[in-house]
Length: 262
Image (cartoon, rainbow, N blue to C red; front, side, top):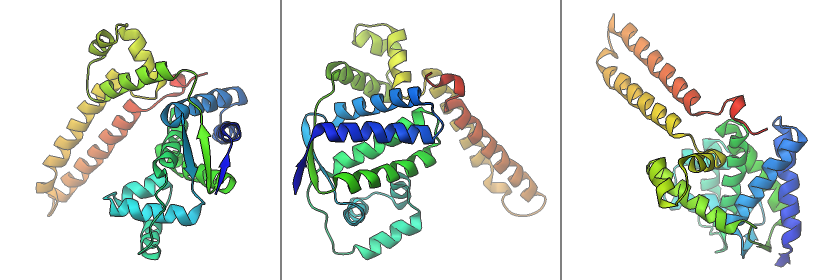
């Protein structure tokens, strides 16, 4: 077991993140800004401690097995690790009876989440972002596998902690005006933090909720028309309408080109 240097890991994360963003269409300047923001967020999450980088695929498989044992769904694991559901089932079968070392597995998961988050912020589809994050971790474990690496805290830890608290309250449903009052700031500043952290805006959230309710109403109305003529045609139209509403919800909560940072 070896101990790596923080500088080498941070340099690696930045360079790989830049390369990843460039492969997904960003120019060099935008990619570097995105990579710096990604590393800063990561340092705020796992900074100030030594993290353990697992050895690679074998240990990753055992970790997946343990996540299943802890109640994670096959579908969620497949999305998170960028694998097919069939591959997850194969891993479960081949790792029966094995256990992962009790090291900081959550730290690697934090990196996976933040890589995917970085890509989504830059306009990559969630499914593609999850797959790319899995590839990113494969490169990371190949380079730093079986090492403890110290990650220093970010320069803006205090500000980042405040931002995390703001996002936590926002996700819990607290109105922006109330959050601003809680932190002694303006609604505009809170709104900028929400956008900066990749969260959907309050207006987008309201639109998403409205469209979700509409989709549910359509699906609730569909079952009686599922069998028999001419009801099958009605059922098909309702399913098409539900799909259209879901597409509208995705567009309403997504980021257009104008929303991306220059």
